[in-house]
Amino acid sequence: MNYDRTFLELLEKVKELEERVTKLENGNISISPSQKGKTLTQQARDYIMEQKNNALEDGEESITLLCNDIQNALGVTNRTPCICTAMYDCMKPGDEVLSAPASGKSTTVLVRYYLSNEKSTSVERNDEAMTLRQLRTDFEDYFHKKKPNYKYPGPLFGMAFYCTKHDIGVTLEDLFSGRVTLDEYEDILIDLFKSLGSSNVMGRTSAYKDAMKNLLEYVHDYHLENIRIINK
Image 1: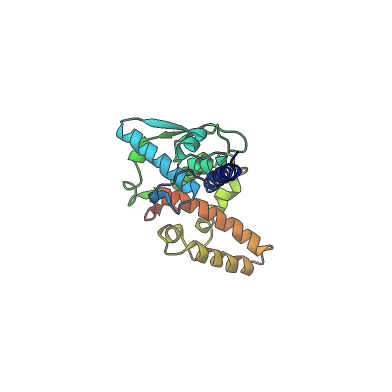
Image 2: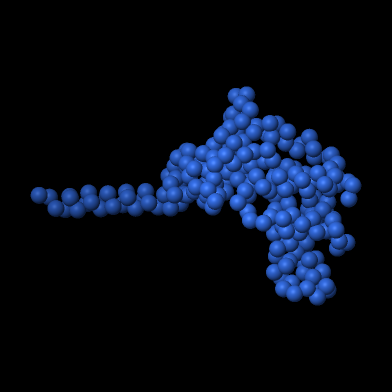
């Protein structure tokens, strides 16, 4: 028996297995050049948008995607949290979570995307005016669809619109357009809460900043950066 040859063959097999494990740990078995440098969540978002665009071109009115099918398409396993995050990120008002556990993360998560949402992206709404009531209603609907398992979102909705109820020197239009950045907004809140003698200034500021971050995600997803808000 040629022990040297057998030993070399075993080494080759071990090396091959190590390479396969490394690829799995990196989140993909085969990554195209266009996907290099992207996180798995970003790759999943790209895949979902590609499927939506393909279905739209085929004249479909909606498309239903399953987490496990997306995993298989990307060549990954046991990466459910990343895939589900991408699925929720790609939702727009009117889309539906057809199946999801309490945790919101499972291979069985099933989402129906309505393609009419893609046709009516906010290029058409970009320069339109929107009442504050409509803005809040749309944002709440967006948030519920995107994060269906978020507990007690009511306070977040109130905090997101804090500057519409109090004169703090910054408006929603300032934040939406980027004239005031989220970090600058944080500094404004810190100074405000300190002046009011609030307890736990940093904790309170963090909560209000997070609420605004969620509102800005809605704004960016719908390209509402230049929206005019009326009936304040």
